[in-house]
Image 1: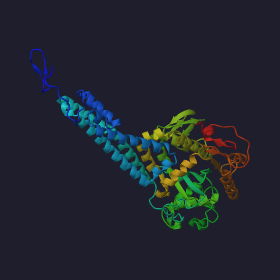
Image 2: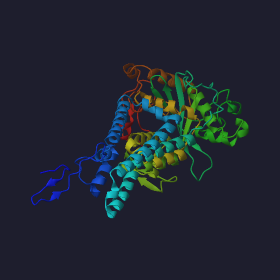
Image 3: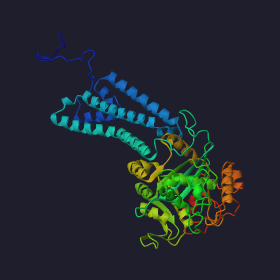
Length: 515
């Protein structure tokens, strides 16, 4: 029985204390069990992936529902953005302004998640635990806060590293030797051009020699509308190249570079000659301009920009991704003139950075043209095996190596358009033309024939795939190689070459290198 004051009468006439009812507006849950050390940790951890859960458990329903609603809206917005964007849209993150925005947003989210965890922990009332429970939960929640903030901090660090790498590699001002009219913001970054021609150089700047020898020279001629690309490979020992009338070296070498030397005047000497003779070039460090002029005049193309990659820095890149897997057809000796440093054995090998470097450089028991083919294999293997997972896992090392190996005159404001163009090229048709024997002789170059072949290769690259095959121009999503754009009989696919014994014909890098 109960009397008026709510107390219950039990046998014997004694009264039991009345049951307390929660007051209206009380924040305590009506049927909640007392929290233990484990439950405090569990609900706090749950709040890391479902903000507001701990507040609901603590009876603060309004706060908990608000947090869950905001979190749900953010998740849906992120999903909508990801599902409605393609690869080309993601190139916007190459913009400096967007990079700053990403860093600010990542920092704000890190602080927000930290605040959510701390308030969730406090809302659960850890002060009601014993002293040991308070110390234990405090330490573990602190560790949890650091763990939750780490992905945002890592994102901001990656973006800042990427931004710093861009600022170190790409100049902030345009090359004074580039005569293109300045482009205003919002206009076509390429100035209304149909094609862009980039000179890609592999530099051999060893510590035991002075200057830079440009041992690998390729021109990527890219159609800006379709992304179709033609790669022109020029041998390092191409002799007596000519310079256009606008070049300072035209007057110095009217009949070709070092034409008076029957065995000299190699293409890979032009860069260093221009740097060594600033009085002729009208300024210091004009090697890139001299080489761009010579190669552009040889192909009858205007070379817009160049990119130099130090081969020794490339070894650091290979080590950063854990090495390269390449099929080696024959033993390749390396080091010195007789290969005394070591031998890369035939077969499927995983090469370290040093081995990959020498595999592409060695001329022991080989020749320049075979070395050119091996260099393409190394580049192709790197492009294929440098997966996004490896790049993200080793991003700091890769960025550091890139800063040491790269030099260019592409200005920073063209980085985002360049990334957009690279994405377009990835899915376009890429063809390759090598100026090597027996079709082209580097000692007695037929300049008219080289220009005609270059013009035809570009024209054929813009034809539909069926017409391009009829015209005997190789085309595939991967880089392909052909000795000339004239009709030839199909060659049997070979493995990685050590001598220039291949017949004319189109071969993909997969066939050529066993990638």
